[in-house]
Image 1 (cartoon, helix red, strand yellow):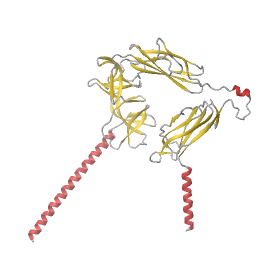
Image 2 (cartoon, one colour):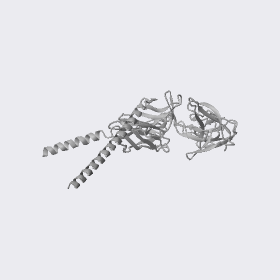
Image 3 (cartoon, helix red, strand yellow):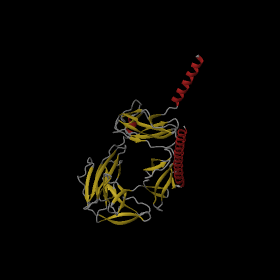
Image 4 (cartoon, helix red, strand yellow):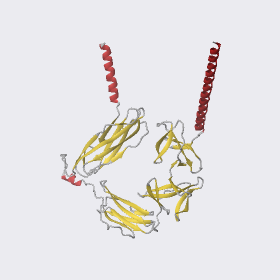
Length: 437
């Protein structure tokens, strides 16, 4: 009995130690535990999994020592068999004190486990010292004076639009301005200069405009990495705007061609009339699909399918994989043995059909805009390739199911007939017996 107890105890310890040795976890570390303000430190988080990571999500968040509200870095979906995932973020403190970095809401799915689960958050603290302090290291005054603190100046000394006056008058501490131009103005030139020569400025130069409001963002980055954004809202007068509402969202029809409109292959420019006004459109002569460009309230331009007969707008979804330009179409029928999932293709969410979530090959229903062929296409998530799918297999599967259904109905019919005949024969024999008695 004692031997059995010892064996069970050893087995229990082995299982426990094994599980602890390979338990999934998240760790966080920094490139330095102590740094001077203005210097950069790298924070690295590592997720480990027993059987390989399928997807992971979460964030690294740092705050303190002038870092501001911190930095949020989201992990990407991996779809890989790697047993560890490392993500790093760099921060630059602007004051002495401490920086606290921690992982938040880390979630993990493993290849060999079902479902998603959360990992325990981990944190780390970095001490930030002042450059003027020797910190007990025996640094000489000459060495200390040679250390140059990185500038935090991220302001402009001037900001203007060539040929126009922005409102209000420029002030380095005023971040938002407005400007109105005539409806025939298609481009403006923005000029700006930083207060500190070490700072970087982006967003100036020639800017292409569309009808209505255009928010132009000028970003200034200080030497130490701090950012500031100046915004000029330029309104191009549109005396007769064409406003539409789609799925409770307001849009304005873009009437003129401009450089902000993304060019599409296999489509030709063509002017049409909408509300008795000339509007630029794009037509595919093979699929007979006509597109117009709409601008939302955030100045984002999107293509929509426009039906000239009923004057309706429908969102245009497409992907471009290799040499295949595919217009996505809703498939409203049931696809036997397949389930609908959403994956990332060409930087957008696409509905696909797969036999299971981990399957690397999926089916996409759409129209090849080059050929006009509407069919299922097979997408290889690993190789990032797409090809027309031989849907005979789907047809065979469907036919097999229909034949099976017919056989079941026939079998049920025969069974009922036999049962009825048996009952009639039994009743007839029973009556004969009673008469003979």
